[in-house]
Length: 260
Image (cartoon, rainbow, N blue to C red; front, side, top):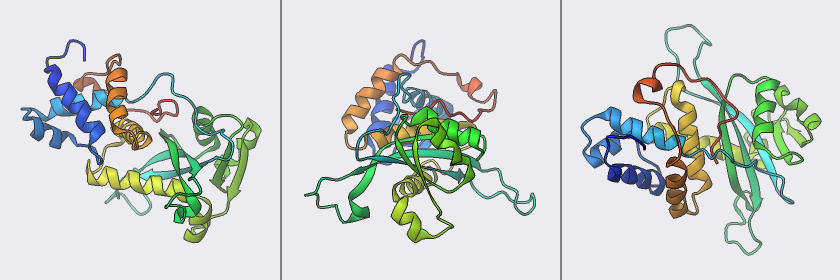
């Protein structure tokens, strides 16, 4: 926000709208709602706020008694046309989510055997190899945590890093997925619906920033006012690129910049 030519009230409105509206807000919606003359201004404000959604001292998830972490990866992106069969430019996104249990007297205990999502971590990764996937897990999940994944070979080395790892052979069976890994698939479904519905898709270059926003809002979904306060506190000290710098270089997949 330092040295900005945009009125401070616009920054406050942006922070409030991003954190208080359940589905979030796109740059086009933000531009229209505040009457900004340029789309680039709206885009840059929202993108700089997304930088503020990452805490430098963010902690690792998992490791609590009675809880475990589901880990999986998915492809994000649309179809690629005109480049041959099997060719695509989709981006691989890895995710880890805490799985918690509701209290015994909860009215929602019949849903997913009383399981629900705790905190989530999302990051763009280079590939589905062991270095990328195990590196992601080590950066976001506390050592010694119980982890459930599918039987993809990229997760085979988690045990040697001190995790209690169990793999499930899904083989595309939705019943197996619903029984053993229902929460992570729910997170992926919500993420893709959000990207398509609110932002109408995003480029791979900026995908990590949108993952940061989704993670920030998801982890604070029960406390929206705390989200507004947290964003102001973190974003006030954050530094970001200019609009020209956003497009000067292509972003690279990372496993370290995950939202708090």
